[in-house]
Length: 242
View 1 (cartoon, one colour):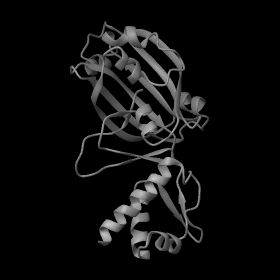
View 2 (cartoon, rainbow, N blue to C red):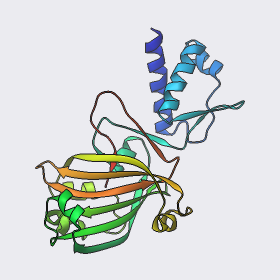
View 3 (tube, rainbow, N blue to C red):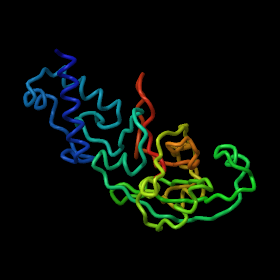
């Protein structure tokens, strides 16, 4: 039953963290207090906390105890937009368009979107927020067939995914590649960090239910904002455009 107790305790603490009962930066009860309040052994508490630490939800500070991390963990079990992912965790997301232009597709964009290099696409740069804080720069290039819907999107619209869904275009799957990069001059200006600061980049291509490519792009996150958890089974759940 020890393993079941560990899972139950980890699940309850995760719920308290994602719901805001235990806000980012707050100190958790001591291991002894957690053991007493949940009627489990201290070893069960330590195992549960270690599991949450691997997910980026809590951290141990020498001599001070366990604390809720500011970073939010994203798993690899479902396809969700940035907005959907944030809402599922009780987080308030937002965004603002800082640049958009209709132009010809580059060779790489044409290949990823299945179009010609002479075809027009919409290139968009947005700053995404969590709890009102700028945390990510989202760069997207939209395929010509969805351009009429996206190009008239308000600069402060929260979700392109919902906008497209309202038009009958449902994004269902995508490809993602994660890597560490250095902040560009534009990243630094938009997010208020130094140029060449470390960032987490997610390159992506997304597709509609009919199999047609919708957009390609990259998201660049500030460090200590989000982490990703991989499991042996499951499909991808990464914050996507929207």
